[in-house]
Amino acid sequence: EIRGAGNILGAEQSGHIAGVGFDLYMRLVGEAVEAFKAHTDAGGDGSLDTLPEVRVDLPIDAHVPHDYVDTERLRLDVYRKIAEAADGPALDAVREELVDRYGEPPMPVTNLLAVAAFRHACRRYGITEVAGQGNLIRFAPVDLPESAQMRLKRLHPRAQLKLASQTLSLPKPSEGQSGAGGQKGPVRMGAAPLRDLELLAWCEQLFVALFGERPAAGAFGS
Image (tube, rainbow, N blue to C red):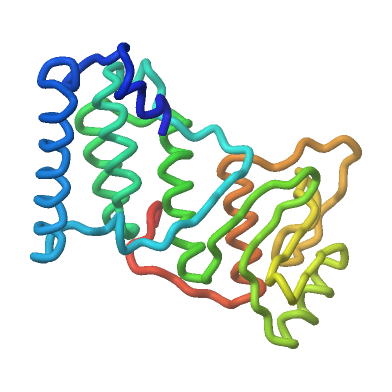
């Protein structure tokens, strides 16, 4: 995803393709895919195929820095393990492995793990998209009963709920504004918008306020 597939059919071939030729390389890839499918059918780790996709597009500094894991292959392996973690205990195990191999994770890695945990929370509430759009944050799909719609209007009068498309848009929260659950706080002019862990926590508070608590055993950070 980061670098693209490369020009595998052109003259600028490199790596395994240049070493074995395109035809043999494609045959090897085909055999690897078939082996993976057989492993999954036999009860292997098919977590990437079974986890519903959740798009999170928020202002969060979440990545694996080069000075934490200095080898590209190992960094990609860290991303893969985080993406494959199917629940909170699996994310905890990934963090423990990172601490053991590379030391205490820096904030961007902690944020990356938190984003993965947030995706699990989204799945519990049936949310497949949380994205910033200008001055708004968009959640979809959102299907609220009438009682929850009334609670939404009370807690967030500026919320925009579109029943036809099942989308909910809320103004981006800033420091000192009302919490997602309706807790009041002083509003400061020019306050910085929430981001990173604070923004993820705000979104989860919104889920709880609208849908009720849906805890997951062994959630990350518990």
